[in-house]
Image (cartoon, rainbow, N blue to C red; front, side, top):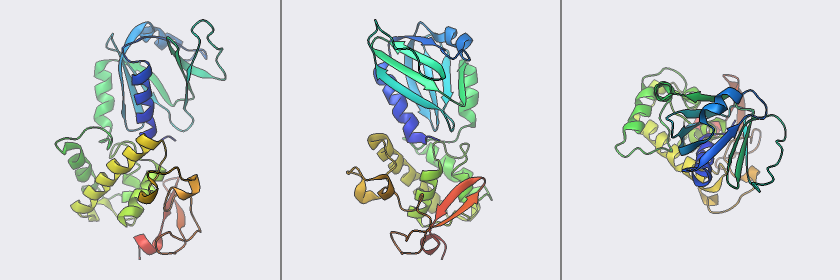
Length: 267
């Protein structure tokens, strides 16, 4: 499943390619056909992301909400407007404006919402580390959600109501970098520890937006490291920890793989 930095990158692409343009929206697959008619032929005002969800606001005050889920994918390309290519596979929604085309396949959610309905969705989502937080309100929301919960921090970071945009990779890497046991209940952490988790999430996700990669080793940020070298613990089960040489552990936490280092995070 794409993590928050990927969705923000897609939103940036939409703003660059489609914002302030009249967009033709169709549903080659057919499942989105009726809803596509509500926004097709309207100008896209802007695209924005909250965590793993993208919101496309059109000039008729309707918003298209898209959640890629596990299988959703985008294909963005430049085309000849006089020779538009046939869709390949099950394209739920197709967006065309001038020479730009974007095909959406396999999303978990693809729905048109009113302003009131958008607010309902936004209200249930946790704070997004990639969105502006000039007065620290979003950081404080996150801190209070964690400190008031008896749930393990490894589960809280995957809860989009607590913090929006964190997935399995960033969950494992942020907790390793903070040297925090993923099993610790949220209410046993110090406020300073939770604040550091938030700041690190802001920092790491910005790197992800800039590079397109989930690089969590600081010394590799300005390089193009191989996938196997980018992280400390994610998908490194059984291999020596890059810091203490203890073999990286793996277990299942709420049906998701959890990677951690016993030596650095628990002992």
